[in-house]
Image 1 (cartoon, rainbow, N blue to C red):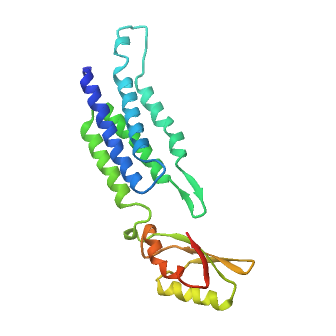
Image 2 (cartoon, one colour):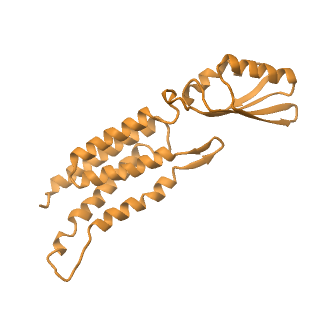
Image 3 (cartoon, rainbow, N blue to C red):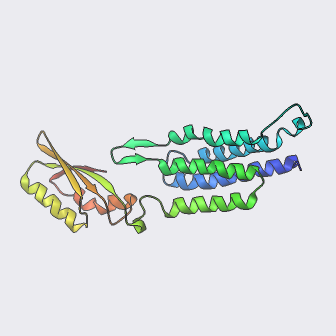
Length: 221
């Protein structure tokens, strides 16, 4: 049975809504792909799914024409790869953007299931994706695996380095590895932490006492 035009519009609207909800969570975390990107991805994938499922009914009456409507949806899943790759970056602290890329790929699934009229599946999928991204994000302290790399530049004096290590111990920060590099009149230290007692967003508040120390010239992560 072919849905009417209003049914098509309803599915497109729902896909845009679900995509926007997923994108809102990414937007709140200041990720590269936010509400607009996820909304457009869900809307477009729903539209393509509608074409794949219903766009060729008028051609089915011709016996000489053999069609495989599923080829459009299969190509859609593959094509989203280039957009996901654009959200992945290699930085000093490692690779970032993998979760956002996976979320975009999953958003395609939301749009496709909405376009197919599988309302329960797309609703549950949206709730599931948002919940997973909101609760089990990489820097969640409940997971116990919050890591960070901190770069500190201090005065090039032995007592300054000893004092820095004592300050880190007071804050509950125990580096698993460290690298040192001397520059003109300063010592640059790179600390690798496998676990910090807070999320990365709260790290600024945790290391605030270090910034006030006169022997510390700069601090970043």
